[in-house]
Amino acid sequence: MGVKEVGARHAVPLLQIENLSVKYHPDVLAVKGVSLTLAKGEIMGIIGESGSGKSTLALSLTRLIPSSVAEIRGKVLFNRTDLLSLSEKEIIHYRGKKIAYIFQEPGTALNPVLTIHDQIDEVIEIHQGVNGRQAEQRGEFLLREVGIPHPEELMKSYPHQLSGGMKQRIMIAMALACNPSCLVADEPTSQLDVTIQAQILMLLKKIQKEHGISMVFITHDLGIVGQMADRVAVMYAGEIVELGKTEGVLKHPKTFL
Ligand SMILES: Nc1ncnc2c1ncn2[C@@H]1O[C@H](COP(=O)(O)OP(=O)(O)O)[C@@H](O)[C@H]1O
Ligand SMILES: [Mg+2]
Image 1 (cartoon, helix red, strand yellow):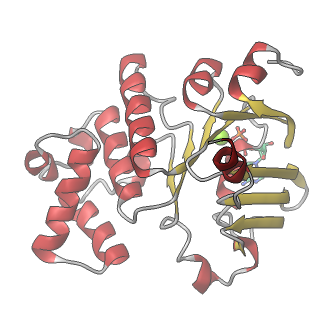
Image 2 (cartoon, helix red, strand yellow):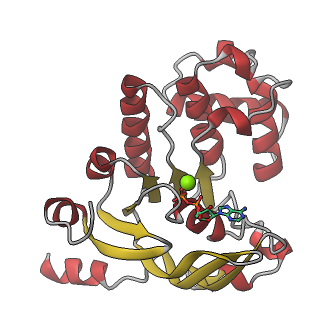
């Protein structure tokens, strides 16, 4: 047993962020030399006050901030491939596929004039190359997986007919469409009512466990990070000022927490 554990600790991390810096033009240094690793199946919580650089860090991992907006430096190794050195054509195999995102505002990512059916179908057709009834079945399977027991009905709805919690479930289903090995969740529940928030967090944890997905989980809520994360990184003014096992960091914070 002991040997196995040692082996696991030394396994190559799924994601290895090395000295990542992000400067918005002309001169806002939002992320300053961040280094972090994420093991397979691990949840890394990132906590910090508003403006500390959490979202910038999340978006930079797959270069979701265009070079016309910011300069990204450093390395983001995903299974040893440096995503920051890939061409646009190469990085699309990672962005949204191997590394999928869930954002704070589920509404904004959905197209108001298309039914849920059409939007889910589109994601599945683009990413998985299946269509027709096969895509539909895959869509229904994904919706059941995110706790929507009768997806046929919901499929006919438009986004404005759905609650925030339901829309976030749909975003999670879409994020799962490509079987990602990493999920980046940026404050995924901060717009939701407390009871719905708890349900979505439970769902994320269940999915993460069942699929062995690694997760970068961003929040400004200490209670939530305590509930979700294996390890926590505390960000302040673009830097990681503290990093460790969640329990240790929350019980004996060295910084301002
Ligand atoms: N497009 C942008 N152009 C210039 N500065 C930005 C832009 N987006 C964010 N920033 C700045 O970068 C810093 C980090 O922001 P952000 O990553 O959104 O922090 P957080 O997610 O922790 O609230 C802030 O000072 C913010 O004002
Ligand atoms: Mg943010």
